[in-house]
Length: 167
Image 1 (cartoon, rainbow, N blue to C red):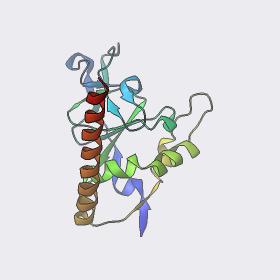
Image 2: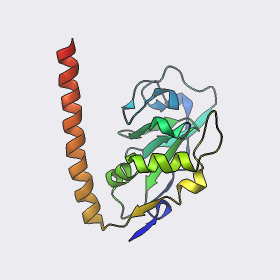
Image 3: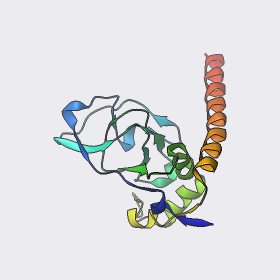
Image 4: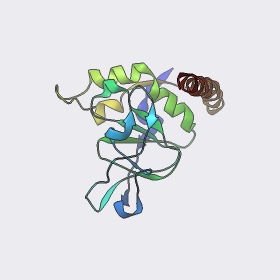
């Protein structure tokens, strides 16, 4: 059984003062790493007084050129540019499970297929919420996310080892 993404999450609302942010807590499409690589420190902060807020446990996805597959599971509270979509899991939905639903290549393919524009395609926020997701109980979501998280940690560790060997 499947249902729409809107059944398991919504777009986060809320603003944060830019004065409360720094290079580590501000996320833009520029400091999101392609191919699900996470984030790096921002090179600059916006000039506006406020920006979109996010909370630890939210899932941030770059909405510009979805084919770059820029996604990050927020590990802390902060702020982000308007070109970053902030997905917040609804009650009864495992936050990590939501991350893995959105990190699936099928989601990025769907986002590209429904995007607007050619030179700098942007995901269609309404269409994105119609993305079909499998329906699992919370217990099943937690188990699936737990298994995938173990694999991610192993990949991260192997990458660290490889980078150290290259030096």
